[in-house]
Image (cartoon, rainbow, N blue to C red; front, side, top):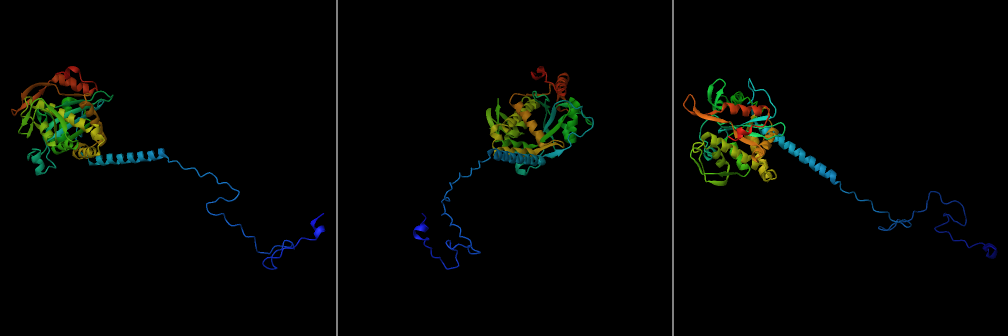
Length: 377
């Protein structure tokens, strides 16, 4: 039995808010233009009823590979910019632009020249370096560096300044006179014609530049079997091992009149100090120390005079080869000596041993090791 039959129709709910509202029990349509209000939003911090909070969005892991790659790219760009900057600072000259060059050969041959140029030195620097007031440019040291093409032993060969050779257009006289007569170009031509060795690269450094390079690496270590006292070069060094600064190192390679071996011993000292300088310049203590590396690179680029086709990366290759020489993995020697003689002016000269010198330079031209008997002299 229904509730209607038992007790009549259900009691009607009174309308709320006036007669114009929709009454469920009366029926009809809801008022036009009005919609039920949406439920209020849940309180902040509380998830909606009936929904579970989802997992938090995953954290983006840092892309370390990408960051490292970008950092390496920045370093490479900066290093490249520095290389081109230092290269632009090199001084250049047409040292190898002459007629009758020797035939090109395997390997790479450098002509290294140490000049007594005073250019760029003020009065105080001239006094400190005992450079005097002489004008012009003369050469105190000349060396050939041969770098084999197949990765063999590089060779450093001294050419004594008093070597008695034929100079194109000037007859026979001392080798260093070629530099006085015609600068780097005539000197390179003279060496090529007297040795038969094709010169690929040229590098020259003067008084001030050499001293600056020694100071840039913090000095070089030299061991002396006997004291050195040379008033002309203003160098006074005790016997034993010691560290030389720039002016002392310059005096050491210039000293001549106090040496028993004269020009030959002087050339030996020059090779010894050049090896010590390269050894210090390529050591980890210099390469990882920016306070030494950048002054060294800057000093080298400012003070070296190179051939007009040479660049800073060629000098880097030379430094690596010289590092092998100084570490004992290369050869250091001088052109075979024959005897002392006199030039037309009565000056003392050095006469090469023609046969042995020819064998040495022929080995270089053919990119072959120098015969051992020439190294044992």
